[in-house]
Length: 322
Picture 1 (cartoon, rainbow, N blue to C red):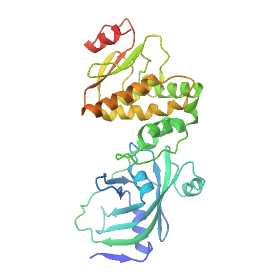
Picture 2: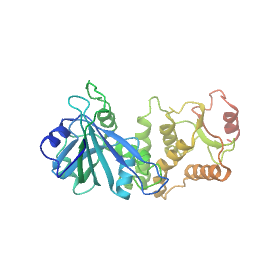
Picture 3: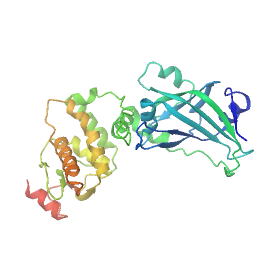
Picture 4: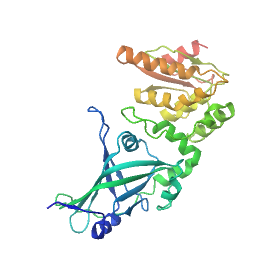
């Protein structure tokens, strides 16, 4: 039933290039690491470059597991399934490499594909084994259409906004491996750059207004409080972005994942030595306390206007700290 082929030629190539979606599987070297399987399939973003090479234009996403695993060990399997017509499964086993958007080789490789807003890399797979099998267990399904969601989303963000998103979501894998950390941090090293980032993040939150005061508490304690009239607006925009909150007066629970994401997003600001970074220090102290005590309750408190009514006990505690 299964057969190994010498190369990606003839009907195999025709089959691959006719598909609407394919799947990639990667894994870290660590025995307890998280394996990953991801779908790919935006039209015009993948191709057989030659009989032993497959590649795709990799768009910015909410994670970066495939890139992290390839940068660590290169192992990858690409799978195509026939959901229409005769049953078939084609697998490409090989070694993958990541050519990032800032690499010299990127433009030449990206020219093989349709332009994709938010593209971060071309992934090139040097194929070592080509095989197909029956696919009798794959169901018949009709193709309805492509979802026109991801390209417009990153087109609205623009080049700089897409890089902001990647710094927040794509720098490390679930296991802490280096993932897509290629975006430059020059803008983060100056006061003017931080101001631009602050305004850019705020502009992407519906209804955003910078709060008069805000803070993050752990088990009811505030390691740092941003006083009314203060200048620390970038951490507020970061917190609003992570929590999907518009800066209005509210008391919100913060998950450990959200706290870590906020720290990762704000961390590059430490490159600017013209100011202190008390919020970053406070958030890191909270994370260390959670680790030391095996957990805890983390809460964010926003006060948009000092005239807003008190909304919670922590809100009252925040105001008392003024």
